[in-house]
Image 1 (cartoon, rainbow, N blue to C red):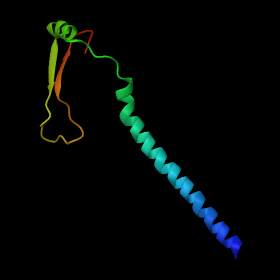
Image 2: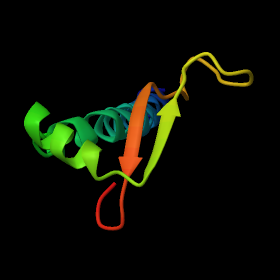
Image 3: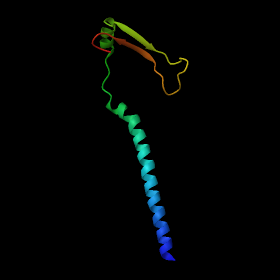
Length: 87
């Protein structure tokens, strides 16, 4: 009788361990995907450098947030400028 209880408890513990590792791994992976670009981002340009590059821009584009078909997660807001050497 006791061997059946121990086997049943062992299976539950193994299932709990596997489920916990799977859930924890999924949450950890999701947080890593979110935070890694934030943590590894390089320093941005200062305002003077942006102004100097803006004068040599050959093409300009603008990201607008409220376009038809955009959703709450995938949107951009700002301006992009590019010349032959830089974006």
